[in-house]
Image (cartoon, rainbow, N blue to C red):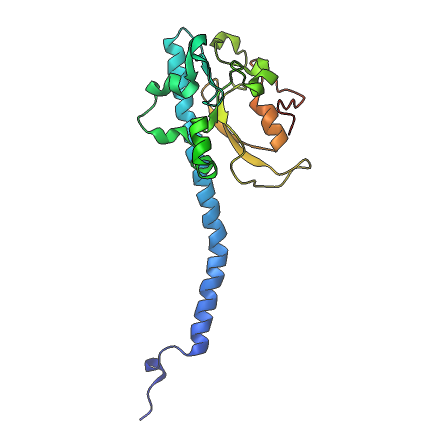
Length: 225
């Protein structure tokens, strides 16, 4: 008596067809999942910046409208002799939650060596020209440390804290001058947003002056950009 087809199971061809369909679906869905993962990582970094923005705002409210007199990071700290705090995050950390992870954008932390992490202290950027910070010294009108909210005449355009570098993968259509990188900022008025910038424009936007004017010329303090 012949067995019915129903009881024979898959043939080799049928099995190969199923495998091919699964492979095609994976090829279609993998980029979607990867993009969703990258978006989620960028959003974590943006939310970290929002927390730092809120912390600095509370610090300012408690200090007569004056921004933290503090260095940009541990590799550009304030010397103890100058007063203030060594770094911005040390100055305002009591205003943030106990979660130390907000000091780091996860993408940046994955890219930066443990040794350099210890040197930096966080993956964000504060605008202070003191103690041999060549970047803010190149754009002194971008400085915030020691200034007051009254000195910032365009708070909606002046970055308060920014991501320290283009750590996220480029996306979208490249501009004529290069690929576009997502970069997160929180501004002096408290709002945070992501911009798509070339490497050159990232440097210029990052050092926007207190009056909201963007520098028109790149002045690399290290002479290597």
